[in-house]
Image (cartoon, rainbow, N blue to C red; front, top):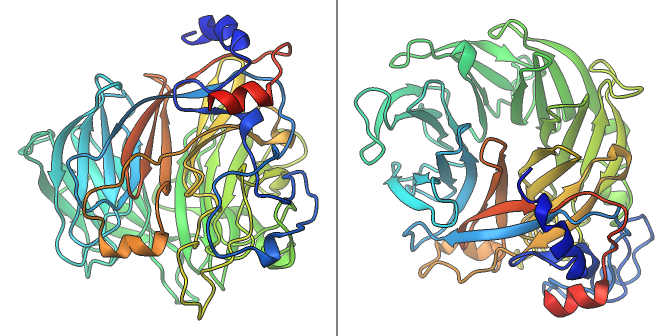
Length: 474
């Protein structure tokens, strides 16, 4: 496959980072910090509220691998305000759609025919007061959906960029889901269904709305799905006809699985309730804990699910691997079998309730990610806030661990939106998406725009990361 011919080159380089990536042997933690293997913290409780992006020791010894992030390009998409949020690549790899998190900025469509030089096709502003945190292609070719949060009645807009009257350069709104503001959504194109999170606080209302979009200009709601509470995200799994749902509220906090064999009528299959599990608030960085379930994504080839937790302050959230049939688990009884924090994770000493300094909120927690199924490995590429883009190896699901990172810290946009100040400074990577058809990845960063990557290398047992060389060449 592409990339394997670089094996000898990588070995000769001592397994250093490719392009702007950094070999795992050079990933470092703060002075006196703990390892990701579970040792107790020694210095983070008294750390100054300034951010540290480097530290001195690797968090763990990875399984030998030469898989690395090869940064191909970076673009601010002609934006001067920034605030880039979710980024997703169309299934054929031709286009990417990018959302934004600040009022009126809207969404972008990017041509990826040459991933070394992405071209902005359109910038489609939204109404004042509207943020487009999530974007998804479909439900038909030439359409994408963008979430509006908050947005009065229009929770999702269906954007026509080539389906009927719109074009890639001149998009039009073809339909709206009048669901109220929504943060995340999933488009099930083969069934003309859209699932949206609804933020309902009604104990008798499911946390996910089901929308029939077979009539694009007049979508209609077809009930709700899942338990009540604050559903944060939802992903449809075509292999198993399941919805993988992340809940992070008081009524429900944890990972929930729904039977979606009938697209418009779902039923709960199983859940992993965080309320009964060890809490991050009582545990140190590196120790497995649970809280604020943020995103759940199934492995396309194995009966596994990668689940990310997000915390804004204190001990950051990490990533779990759940067994739902791989060995002892099942959809009715998902079993956590692997866990890791991001490579430089440390306690976030600011951002708590009542604190004026908010610039470390979210820094070292996990955010949006994608699974990378390779012929001889399974990886995860993730936008992990102040870590930038992080590559994890989940080939052995009981030993999920980071193997490479690329700081998305190109110069920030010229006039950052004032709301960006709460996030301090770049890198602040929001999401990462992988396209198997083109073998490229895309990351969006709040401050600095989008980045494209190849994931290059090969698995093996003879290559050993050489920390000294990697550090010198990082």
